[in-house]
Every structure is written in C-alpha cells, then in structure tokens.
Amino acid sequence: MHQNLIAMHHISKRFPGVQALKDVSFSLEKGEIHALLGENGAGKSTLIKVLTGVETCDEGTIHLEGKPIAAKTPQEAQRLGISTVYQEVNLCPNLSVTENLFIGRERKRHGLIDWEYATNASQQLLKMFNLDIDVSLPLSRYSVAIQQMVAIARAVDISAKVLILDEPTSSLSTVEVQELFKIMRMLKERGMGIMFVTHFLDQVYGICDTITILRNGEFVGTYPTSSLSRLQLVGKMIGKEYIEMNATPSSCPKETFDKKALVELHGASSNQIKNIHLSLEKGEVMGFGGLLGSGRSETARMLFGADQLTEGTLMLAGREVHLHHTLDAIRNGIAFCPEDRKSDGIIGELSIRENIILALQAKRGVFTMLSRSEADRIALHYIQALQIKTPSPDQLIKNLSGGNQQKVILARALATNPELLILDEPTRGIDVGTKAEIQKMVRLLAEEGMALVFISSEIDEMLRCCNHMVIMRDKQQVGELVGSEITEAAIMECIAGGAQ
Image 1 (cartoon, rainbow, N blue to C red):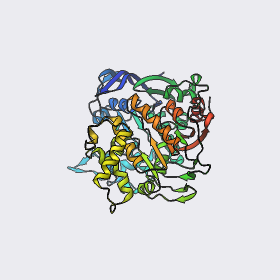
Image 2: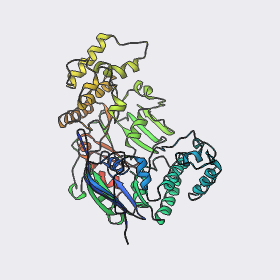
Image 3: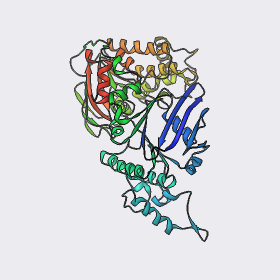
Image 4: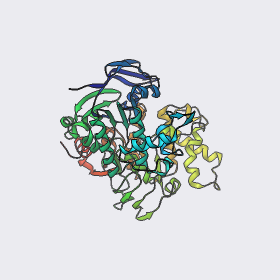
C-alpha cells in the first residue's frame, strides 16, 4: 500500500522579476527513489529550497506523513526528518570524520564531549555503508567519494525519513556510483523516501522508480520510470515532442574556407570529461548539443585552457599546443564568452571600456600597455558595431542591461582578433531583439572565416546557427551531425541514446 511521505501541492515562488515556480506539485512515497529532473532554470533547486526551509513559498501546501509543515530553516527541516546532501560536500574537511558526523549533536558526559561514544557510534554508522575507515582522521584525507558517503551517513542518521540527493554523483567514478546505488537501495528497503536530482539519464533509469519533470518553473508531469522512454523524457524536459520534429533542417550552410582543420581534439580528456574527438574548420559553427550537465561547458573550458587536458591532444592549425592557462589560449587565437556573465564575465566595478580591452591587454602583456586613445578607439568601435546602448564608454558595466552586458563580453572576445570564438549560452536571459542580433553576428563571423563553438539549451537556436554538431551525454561525446543531418529529431535521438 502506497504511503506518502512528502506531498507538495500547487507550490508557487516568485523572486523579483522571476517566477521561479508556478503551481508545482511533487509527492514522495516511503520506499521510493524519485527523480526530479529539468533543464537549467526549471525550478528544481527552488523546489528543494522550499521543502528544506531555505525559501518560503508564496502559495501552496506541504505535508509530511499527512501533517502540514512549513519549515523556516534547514535545521527545522532536519528536525522534521528531511535532510539534503549536495553536489559539493558541505562538511568541514579540517575536522575528523567523527566530528563531521556528530557536530552540533554531541553527547556529553560530566560536562565534556563523550568522544569514546562518538567514535564508536561513527564506526557503527559507517558499517551500514560498508565503510571501514579511521574515523579519527581529518575528512580531507579521504576521497571525494568517501566524503560523499560520510555526508549521506550524517544525513541518514539525522533524518531517517526523507533524503534529498542533489547531483551527488557528479564527482564520482562509475564504481563509486554503483556503491552509492547499493546504499540508496538499502535505504529504500528500510522505507526511506529519496529525492534524486541528476543530469545522468543512465542513472535515472538504473535506480529510480518515478520521474517528475519541471520546465521553466512549471510542473510537466510525474511518470513511472518504466513507462517513459528516454526520447520521451528528453522531449518533455526541453519542451519538444518527437512527433513535432521529423525533419527540421539546419538553416546554416557550411562555407569551406580551408579544408585543413583549424582546431582538432584527439582523445581529449580532463577531470570532467573524457575521450573527445572533433575537427573544426574555418567558417564552421560547431554546436555542442546535450542536456545541462552533459559536458558541453566542460569541453568548452578545456578548449580555452580553463580546464587542463589529462589525456589526448589539442591541435591548432596542424600543430600540437599545450594550454596551461587561459592566457595561453588567448595568445593562440582563442576567445571565450562564459556561460555565467555575472560571475565569470563582467567586472561590475569597471567601465565598459575597461571591460572591453581587458583580454586584449592581457594578450599584449603588462609591458605593452594600451594607450587611452587606443582603448577609446577600440571601445567606441565595438559599441557602435554591436549597438551597445550606453551614454559613454565610461559607464560602469554593472549599470547596463543583461543584453548589453553580453554584448560587452562579446566585444572583449572580438577585440583579441581570435581565430576560434567559443560562445557558451551567449543568449541566455536576454531579450528577443538582442538574441536575434547575436545569432546574426555568429553567422556573419562564420561567413568571414572565423571558426566558432556555439552552446545553447535551445535547439531552435542551434539549428539556426550551427552547421556541425557534437552531441554530449553523461560527460562523453555520443554523436556527431553535419549539414543536413542536423535536425531536431536527430539531435534528440543522440541525446536520448537512440532509445525510442
């Protein structure tokens, strides 16, 4: 007989300018592993924050075992029996394993902490997880996988009702993931309800009983895992049913400027992705397709030297190069516009002019300073060319709209005169008009012979801009499409693994 542990009904949450959740429902049963899925901005994190007391919902109700609850803090949620383990282990690496397990809930004897009890209890607790480790050592002495297990052990010991695992497998190897799954199945058998957030489709189908999908802050549906094919799942996550997209061709033609590849990756791996093979010519716009977390951004970062190659080779114009840091990439004719312009792109307290010339000055070095007149000339050129709306180059970039900030980041990249331009979600969060301008600019740069890498969560946008696509899934390259092969149906089939 099914027993609801958690029942969230008609949850809505609004932040200034953003409707994060709108009429979302979610339920979790005892002894169930329930996947919560959705693309970036779908509302998964906000729903978890509402459930765990980090945020308060504007509308809706939450019941735990049939009783209404409204946790105001994560500590209150824990007392109710709801614990969360995040992707980044939120424990104290400088403290011992025992201290991490019992911090904040120590047992005292004669006014002092009873370390003998804590040590014995830690060892007994970790035996449940098949962990035989020295609990007196600092947590930092152990691998990320063991740290993750310790975090789960602490959460289980506190909670024993509901466990939320938010991207717990991102840093784990295949063997470590299987160990985690054994623990999840054990907890399921004991009646615990587990909410599992992941971007790995193989893991969803390997461990989950039920799937709930959110999209753009709204509830799409809840489905038994066995009733939903991977292709249907991908379609519901991105808002495209397979039947709608039989043959939408790419509108971006390929003009070949040079038969020789400008950029090549041969068996390239980093700490995040593995075994990438690609070849990009001048005049090509290569799209990296896949769901959020598939490895798109990690591949882009590897191309720009932000993440180091651990295996394989990177070739530029036929010669092998080693990018030890991003400045090496800039000096080799590579420019990058990052996904998160707020944290990784703009420097808010600097002017538009200073933000535009930043990469060019780094490329030239500290002993070849740009003069004020040259900086003004460059800034004014790109302000006019990209139609950046500002009264002056001296305006602080933080005072611009999101779309105009994005144009400044593009100007910074173009000012270095790159041969390869990498654009990671360049149109996210900007208005339709600016989005169209950026798409047009991508096409024009390709027509002039520049090679571009283009990443977008919107398939329609990829179709308009790309004439070559590499498809990613679970941190690996799983397909490649060129020219007329690029259709929505083909992209989704690759993302889903060809399973109908």
